[in-house]
Amino acid sequence: MGPDSERERKDLVERLGKWGYVESAAVRRAFLAVPRERFVPEDLRRSAYEDVPLPIGGGQTISAPSMIAIMLEEAALREGEAVLEVGTGSGYNAALLAEIVGPDRVVSIERHPELAELGRANLATCGYRVEVVVGDGTRGYPPRAPYDCVMATAGAPRIPNPWRDQTKVGGRIVAPIGRSRLSQVLVTARRTSESKWETKEGTPCAFVPLIGSEGWRE
Ligand code: SAM
Image (cartoon, rainbow, N blue to C red):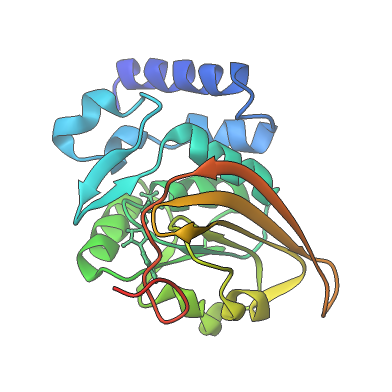
């Protein structure tokens, strides 16, 4: 990591703060720490600190930093909390999550084995202890449940019931939810008791579809 990329990263975090996307010290620290250029394809590294989504292969994308910042702020994570990320992709968001909650607290699930391998390799190269598993994340990941937060980075038609079942009381689900495969609103659902949820609809967004038994069909 050269001084240039560090400067670019600082500039990006400053812009995200000025625009109101990064608000908390924890999210700010995470964005300052994770080298985004290491998670994007080599030929796109010069664009790593632009606020745009970038292709990562297999028709998938790494989301724009501002979108990720909104999701991380919504999640209101604290150190030590257990997180399930659905949609590993490049591993960048998993790295940000790990910066906030700490090593071995994040498990990330990806349906494409090649992308899971990419995410795993990127995370390991940058020294992040995150478990990456291959599977259908619409079913959650029972072996490490319950979670303080389930965060999805692909758009679902509705919140899958397994995510609800695997979230602790006090926990949050942050996910793009929409009636069409390519446009959603960001939904934050907080479990306030065994049987009650508070649900908030936020910003419109456009994630790739969440494909699986409790998501969209292939
Ligand atoms: N979080 C990623 C990052 O930081 O690079 C970006 C994720 S990309 C926008 C969405 C990912 O969700 C894709 O890699 C896609 O293969 C994955 N995906 C879609 N449906 C899935 C499912 N049912 N289970 C797990 N992953 C899924």
